[in-house]
Image (cartoon, rainbow, N blue to C red; front, side, top):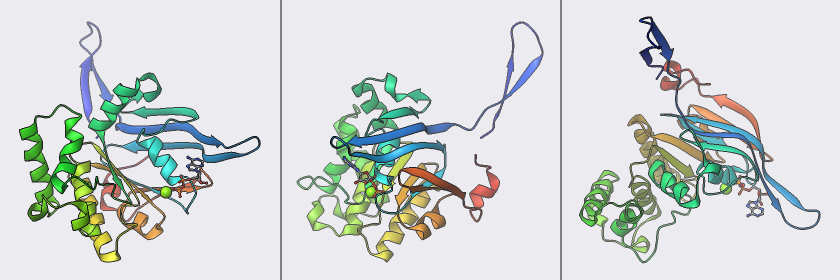
Length: 262
Ligand code: ADP
Ligand code: MG
C-alpha cells in the first residue's frame, strides 16, 4: 500500500503529503479470554495477546493442542467476545456494535473454514453455498448464479446438487471454501482446514487458499503444523499457553520481500 495521498490544509496552497498506512483489517489489543469453571478454577484460554492482520496478508496462528488457537480464531473472527481487551474489525471497535451490526459486518468481511467442514447435511452443495447470502439480502437468482460460479471455481461444477455425505472430505472442504467466499469477504479464516484430510487432498486445499491470497484475499490459517505455517504464510504467531510466544516472518516468501511487515 503506502499510497501517497496529496492534500491541502486550509487555505494554504502548500501541498501536504500523507503516507497512507497499511490497513489493518483485524486488530486484537491485549485480549484475554478466561473461562471461570468453578470456585478456584480459571482456564486462561487466551492470556493477553496482540494480533494485527493487514490487508492482503497470509498469517498463521500456530501452536500445540490447547494453546488457544481456536479461541483466538473465534476472537479474531468476532464469533466470540473477549473477557478483556479490544478487538477492531476494519477499524471499528466491535464492543461498540450491537449483536446484529456485528453479525452483519462479520458476514460481509469474513469467511470461515473449519476442520470439520461444518456443512449442513440436509442441504446440497449449492444450497450450502447460497445460505450465507440469504442473510445479506442477495436475490435468489443472484444467489444461485454466484453459488454455481463458486462451485465451478473450486472444481465442483458437476456435483452442485450432491449432499455432503455424497462427497469426499476434500470435496466437502471445497464446498466449504465456496461457502466462505459467498459474500466475497476480504478475510478468510481457516481453522485447521486440512486437519481431516489426507496430505495430498490437504495440499490441494492449501494451494487453493494460496491462490485466493494472490487474488487479494487476506488469509488467516490456524494450524498446529509448523511446516504448513512456514510454507504458506508470511507471518506466523506462535502461541503457547494462551500467549504469543514469538512471531516469525517468512523471509522465503516472495511477497514478504516486497512488502515490509510490522
Ligand atoms: P487449540 O485450538 O489451540 O487446541 P483452544 O483454543 O481450543 O486450543 O483451547 C485453549 C484452552 O481453553 C484449552 O485448555 C481448552 O480446554 C480451553 N477451552 C476452550 N474452550 C473452552 C470453553 N468453552 N470452556 C472452558 N474451557 C475452554
Ligand atoms: Mg483448535
